[in-house]
Structures are given as C-alpha cells and as structure tokens.
Length: 162
Image (spheres, rainbow, N blue to C red):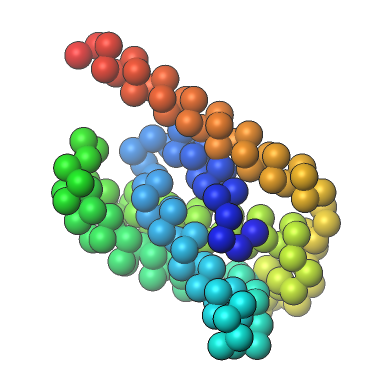
C-alpha cells in the first residue's frame, strides 16, 4: 500500500485505544519513512520496491530513527501550529514509531509479493494473500473511521466538562 492513507486507519484506531500513550504524529511520520524505499524504486533510482525497509530488520531500524527524529520534530510542529496538545514524550514517540513501522510491513505483506517481512529470520511471506485487497482496504478504512469517532467523542466529552 505505498503512498496511501490506508496505513493511517489502524493508527487512528490505536490512537483511540492508547490516547496520550502513543503519538499519532510520529506514527504518521513513520509511514512516510517506510515508503522512501518504494518511492526510490518507483523513480528507478534503486532496483527494488520493498526491500530491506519492508522487513523486520528494516522496520526496527526505521522505528528507532522515527523515534529519535519524530519526538523533536513533532514537538516543534505542535508548538509552531499552537496545537492544543501535550508535548510528545519519549515513550509515546517510541510506541508511535514502532507500531507504525511494524504495522506497515504487516499490512504491506498482505498484498505485495516482493516483501519478506520476517527477514533476516526467513525470506518467506506467510501473510501474502491472507486477506483480499478489498477486505484489507475496507478494514483499514473502517478502523480509521472508528478511531476518528472515538477520538472525536472523547474530545467532545472533555470539552463539555470544561
């Protein structure tokens, strides 16, 4: 699912469950980092679309990079936009980054034949075709809508209490 909003659906649902303990901003930034390799492949700059970045090893490395860069960049963005949210702490950044990178390879492994999600442990892709594309996209969209609904209701009730 390169360059699609579908990866954000599960992120919104996880944010609804985790609240302040997970950063949706870092999660979203991680999705961008994960798809740099496919972008380079689509542009013909490298020979693969889903290589090491879409493996367990790559996801862990990108998760670490996203944690270390996502917290300071995310907090700077929140300040610049004057967004009424608490600053992102390290645990929330790490959870957003690693849930983002690991869920990304899991979702992509369901639909792309060239992914080896468990590399370096194995080159097999046990998730390939476990769901139809329509079920995968529909599930991601449904999770996103449910997550938005829960987050919206939570904010509505908090605003009413003030």
